[in-house]
Image 1: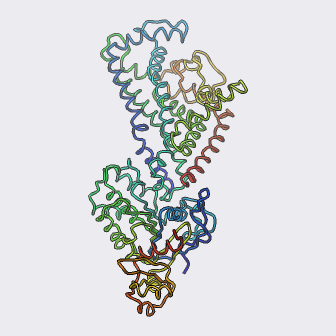
Image 2: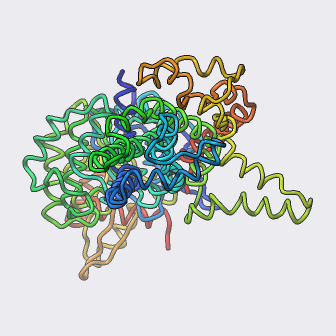
Image 3: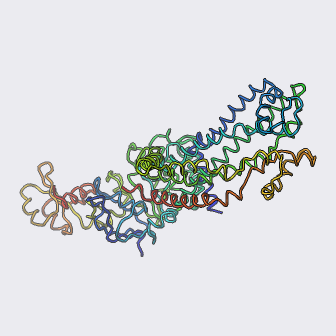
Amino acid sequence: MSALVSARGLRKHYGRVHALDGVNFDIEAGRIVGLIGPNGAGKTTALKAILGLTRCSGELSVLGRDPVRDRARLMQEVCFIADTGILPRWLRVHQALDYVAGVHPRFSRERAESFLERTEIRRKARIGTLSKGMITQLHLALIMAIEARLLVLDEPTLGLDLLFRRTFYTTLLNDYFDEERTILVTTHQVDEIEHILTDVMFIDHGAIVLDESMDTLAERYLQVSVNPDRVEQARALGPFSEQPLMGRTVLMYQDTPRERLAELGEVRTPRLADLFVARVSAEHPA
Amino acid sequence: MNTVTAMTTQVRRELWEHRGLLAYTPFVIAAVLLALAIGGVGFGVGQFSALVEGDLDDLIPGAGVSARELPPELLRAVMLLTMTMSLTLFVAVLVVMIFFYALDALYAERRDRSILFWRSLPVSDLRTVLCKLVTAVLVAPLLVVAAIMVVQVGSLLIAMAGAAFTAGGPSPGELWRATPLGSLWVLQVYGAIAMALWWLPLIAWLLLASAWAPKAPLVWGVLPPVALGLIERMTVGTSWLFSALGERVIGFAPRAFEFDARRVFGMAGDGDSVDITIGAGSVLGNSGDAAAVESGLNVLALATPGQLLAAPGLWGGLIVAAVLVAGAVYVRRYRGES
C-alpha cells in the first residue's frame, strides 16, 4: 500500500532555527495520526508543508502530488481546520456556504446544511458574532461536507470549552471518519485524542523522536513503578526515563520483555502524555 | 463552466467583504445627488436653462438665445451638460474606491489570518489575485457607471416633472427627446473600461503593495513611488517619475476621447472621424428628422477607441501590470511562511 503522505529528508529552517531537521515519515490511508510535540517543535511547519503553505527542502508527496506546486488541486481532496481564528469575521454563515459551494467541486451543500441543523447557528449571523465553539462547529460542518481523503487538524479545539472539545471528536469519528479517510491531528491536549488515534508521532526540535502505531506502542513501551529497594535492579534493564512518584520510582522501557519488568513492580502501558514527556526529555536532557 | 462559477463566486465574495466601499458608496452618492436635484428643480427648468445660457454662448459662439426659445441643438447641449455634470465627481469616487479596495484586497486576509481558510480551498493564488483585479478593474467601474445611470435617469425624470409644471419652457417630451441617454451610456461604459485599462498598472501596483505590506499597506502603496520621485528630483533634477504617474492617472482621457466641441455639436464636418461616428446618428436620431440628426449632438463622436488602442502607453501599461500581478501572486503564495 502506498502512503498518502510521504516525507523524506524534509528540512526547513527559519534563520538558524531548524523547524524541520531532515524528517522522514509516511502516513497511510485510513489512519488517524496524532502529531505531538512541544511549542516550536516543528508541528505546524510540518502541517504547513503538507498543506503546501510552506516550501521545504527534501521530498514531500501528498496524495502523489507536490503540495506547494499543486496546492489548489490538492485542496480538492485535503481539508484543513486550524484553531478558531481563521474563518473571516465579516463573512456570514450563508455566505460561507455559498462560497465553498461555489469553489469546491466536492462540497455537498445539503450535508453541510444538515450538520448545521443540529446547531444553534443562524444562517444570517456574521462569523464574528458567533462563539468560538460555534465557529468550530461551522468549520467542521463545512469540512465534513467535503469528500476529502485527508483532513488536517491543527489544534482544532484550542480555546474551546470541555463540552465542545468532547463533541468535536465524537462528531468527527461518527460522521466523518471511515477507512477511506485519513486524519492528521496536532494538539497539546494529548489525553483528549489518545483514545481515537491509530498512530502517533512525537516531534521535537524538528526531528521525529517516535513514530508508532498505537498497537505496537502498547507492545513496545512499558512503564514500571518500583519501590526504592528495586531501583538499582530496574536501572540495570536500561530505562529511557526515570521519575520519582510518591515514594516510588516510575521507569519507562522500550522493547524490554514484560515478564522481566513484572518481577520488579507494577507494569502498565504508559499513557501517551507520560510517554511523550519521558521521550522528549530523554532525547533532550535539560 | 466550473471555473466560471468559481470565479463568479470569488468576485461575489469580494463584494460581500467590501460591500460598503464598492456596492453602497456609488449609490449613496447617487441618492444624495438626486435629493439635491429634487431640491434644485424648484428653480424651474427655464431658469436653469437661462443660468447655463452663458456657458452655451462660450461653447457655441453666437448662439445667444433666450431660454424660452431654445433651438433643439441648444436644448440638447443643456441636457447633455445636465446629464454629465456628475461625471467628474463619480470618476473621483471611483478612484477612491479602487484605491482603498486594491490596498485592502490582499492585506485584510493576512491581517485577520483568514488567508489560511481561503487557501485551504481549491483556489489557486493566480485565480484569487485575478478575481480581485477584475473586481477593481471591471466590477467597481461598472457599479459606478450603474450609479451614474441612476442619477441620469433620475435627474431626467425630475427635469421632466419640473418641465410639466413650468409654463413656457420645453415640454417633458422635448426634454426626453433632447437627451441622448442611450449613446451616453455606451460612451460611459466605454469610458469606464478605457479608464480601468489605462489604470491597470497602478491597480496592479496597489495589489502588490497589499500582498506585500507587513502592515500599513497605504504607506507601502504610496511611499515608494513618492520617495523615488523625490530622489529623482533631488539627484537628477528631473520629474520624470511624477509626470509619468500623473500621465498614468489622467492620460486615458486625451487618448480615449477627443474633446472637440465641433464634432460633438456637429457644427463642422470632420473627415477623420468617419469610422467612429458610424452608427452614432441612429442612436441620436430620436427626432427622426434627418437635418436634426446631422446637426444634433454626436456624443459618440467623442470616443476614439482606435486612438486608445494605438497608444503604446496602453500596451506598455498592460505589460507592466502583468509583471506586477505576477509579483502579487508570488508574494501571496509565499508571504505567510515566516
